[in-house]
Length: 283
Figure 1 (cartoon, rainbow, N blue to C red):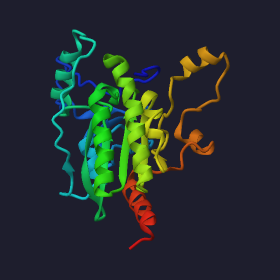
Figure 2 (cartoon, one colour):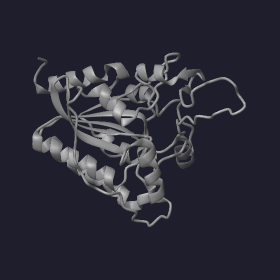
Figure 3 (tube, helix red, strand yellow):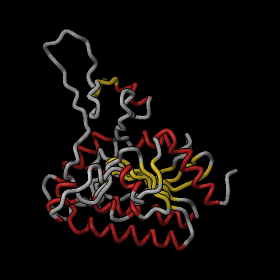
Figure 4 (cartoon, helix red, strand yellow):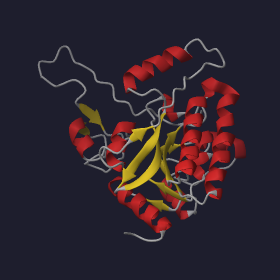
């Protein structure tokens, strides 16, 4: 998993026992870009965007579904797959248990079907709060199953990626998911079905090197960090200085790696229009 230079954006609520000021614990957070202390509820109402500077906070899967999918239409794929511990690491199962209790998620991706303005799609959404959205066996299998369902049901596929890369706790087996998801997407392409990849901050490593980069159309949120390895690793490998901001969505758009940067408020309508264009025109 690529973790170089990727910082956690988790805000720890600290209670000052000596203070007489009644401030609810966990109700405030600090913007990493402008440093402003923000009321959490106000940020949530603003699509998880800082109202002061426009900084994009990362989104929980459930919040992303509310933003993209028509209310009451989402149906999660009922896949009973357990995450294993192939390297027999002592702390791995404990970490998974803690994360499941903390995030309410079983794994780093949720997959299912739902409607966008009435158009049914297959959708996969990754979550950085679960082991930095890393791709292990279960994540790879869920993505692959979703691609197969899109082919079976003849539906467009939309994947929201956020990831540090392949899951190092599962070793080479996690790397095999790159080939598996890529092979499945080849079949989707042969079936003539649309795949829209949406890159959010950050998208790195084996996820970037596989399904995230293979969309018929690749969208990204503003200022999302996108790459394979971190900047320091690349500099040490090639022995050269790198351009400022070379892994930002804006730089990648300028150099043709992605097709469009879309603000969060416009994502649903943009995806809907692309689906309708692929079908032969808007209704």
